[in-house]
Image 1 (cartoon, rainbow, N blue to C red):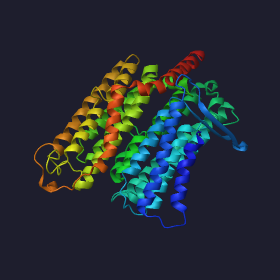
Image 2 (tube, one colour; image 1 turned 180 degrees about the horizontal axis):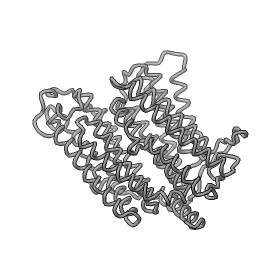
Image 3 (cartoon, one colour; image 1 turned 180 degrees about the vertical axis):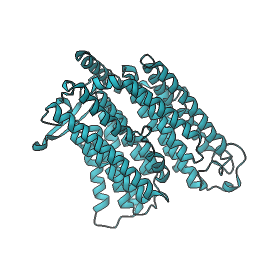
Image 4 (tube, one colour; image 1 turned 45 degrees about the vertical axis):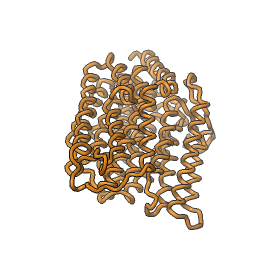
Length: 494
């Protein structure tokens, strides 16, 4: 059942890319959206069949692959990976739907989108360290090309910078994975067979540092964040949706799955430093966002701040904080995707994202009142206004982290106030006041262009009012992860 999630987008990519007939851009888009939609529906089927009370991996698939390397084709789903799989499939559909039908080299573009979906899905499914690494590196290639070919004026610089940072990330992660397997004496890369708790404490620390740097680049955390604003600014709107909504979650997922879960002794020792690191990322990202005049760059820096909350929750490592971390992954995925979609529409119609240029977009006759209303939903959710998913995820993180790190939690809460500041600046400058002369005659925004943003807005409100619909998938798994880490730490005297 899990292999289907990998084969469907691969089949779609092959069909679009190699079918020996002439395919128009419009037909390419329809084929791509069809395969992505079927993949999304299949994740819903898996979610329905998933047993949330079973904390073990479900729908397991295992096939021996390369015995000499200890590499096996081993897939599975638990409450940590299932919500991220659904999010990845949903945002892939939205990214495809939001793509301009007249895009150049459409067959190559849509093939890369489906290949990107395959890489991310495989990373969330992999139960083998080396298999995870292969999928983790697979998503690098299509994302680099999507930025380098269809990006903005400085796309070459942004794509190359992304490639270098992500390559370093992969090297650090692979080195730590190899160290875990070889030093523990394991004959395979299977996660379940690793006995990392028996490793010397200093060795665990060194392995964890590699994982923290590797996944810290992907998240990204300060000071490894500089590739993200450049990539977002130069990437097209659909690629920014996937980059912020899904790709960054590979980093936070990796920290929980391979850092906290496999090296609990070292994680507990490093936790105070991680909490401080989280505070630095939250406050620095939020402060940089306040200083931006480019709407897209402002949203990009907001991601740095909001991903810091997840590191704080992971450092605290309580059942409540880890549950909040997973909810924050989903929350940030939906909210950031909505904000990038809306900023993309403003840029497409107004020709600028500069807050000194565009003003008065709430004008009911010549502006974008519906887009402005949806933007209000997005910025309120990102600012943690009650009744939306952003509030419940951040509240659970702060409530679960306060007992372990009260000072760091209070400092991180300041980040929510700073979020309100920079998004108020964005709304006040871009949407209120008299319509500026530069954008006095805006093209019409059609309802077909608003549909993805409306869908995301509805989900943000629904899960904000009824977060239990998300929590029941994850709560048992996250609680079991924390309890297992605690038992290992106590057994080893830490």
